[in-house]
Length: 109
Image: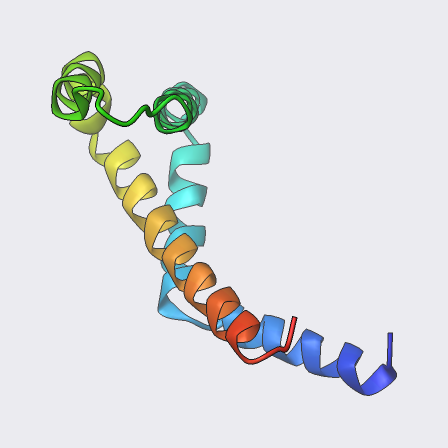
């Protein structure tokens, strides 16, 4: 990798780490890591959500499936430490998707 590009990537990484989204995510990650059982529940919820998303089929009753998912994990969603962690992670991931989308839009790929 070109030395200038390498330096720019390092600087860009520091810019990302200086965003409110990243700082909030790191703080919530630190808090939930102090409770391994809550982190395990949050990771299970994310895994099940990913599985549900991957198994989506057009014409399937999505609302009913979402309701069942929400009912099954209501206690997890109601746990403040988990909820705040998931919201912070989601905000950080959204920011990263926007950055990657902007980057790809500007590169003739």
